Image (cartoon, rainbow, N blue to C red; front, side, top):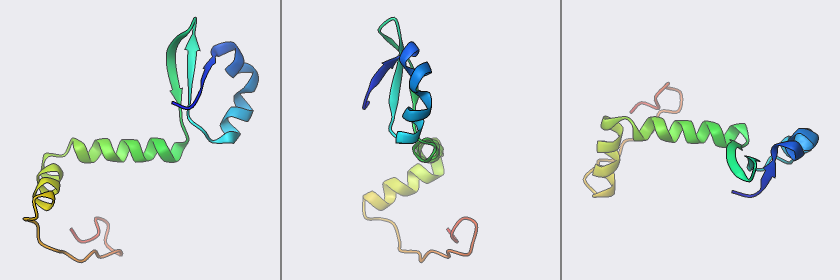
Length: 83
């Protein structure tokens, strides 16, 4: 993590911390209790978790890494890119 701030400091600087767009940890009595991160990073993290929790997607990723997958052109106009 980039920075750790106590709750009292976050309360005083929340607007600036959010505008800076960096990840930070909020601590309470020197113990981390919360993580704040830009929405783009949160969305990417959630998307990654979705892929990792999908057995079919993981099987295809493993096949591709092993060189056993076939090339499929992407259809950018289709909801799931034509896959």
